[in-house]
Image (cartoon, rainbow, N blue to C red):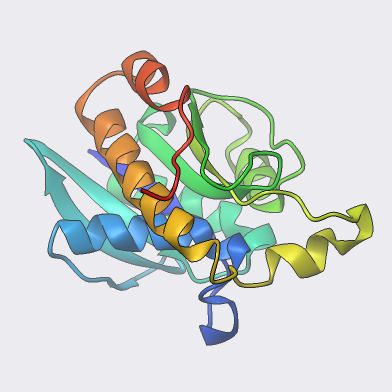
Length: 193
């Protein structure tokens, strides 16, 4: 069994913000599988069990704020007896332009508070992560406000396409190897088609 966790902040206030793009990808993956989410006892998460090919997996959305999501991820792994190598975390990335995704087998948090929390809770950075580009604000001091802002009408068509591409990437990770998936999805930018 595998676990895909989308990162974001709970509540309607944050639902369509840049920082919640991880939630958006995992919700789109659940919708494609025809499944909804329900509260997962003892984990502080909403979860959905789906099948991709012959693979059974859990999709999860932490109910904690971003900087506290590590304990939720740890609880999900423990409850379902899933190895860290079978974890994929989906999150936003301000260092990637909107329209780009990047999947890696492991790595640092690169300043992302959600990834920092997960690395601290698991005592390892050796889990896959799918970063979805949201671009960077013009002024450095505007980062907090920027990630909690919505997408412009001009950006929404690109967002729609990149969410679909991120879903395809997550499915590729489930069905194949991380190396194959990196070779397919890390090279190209998704434009508004």
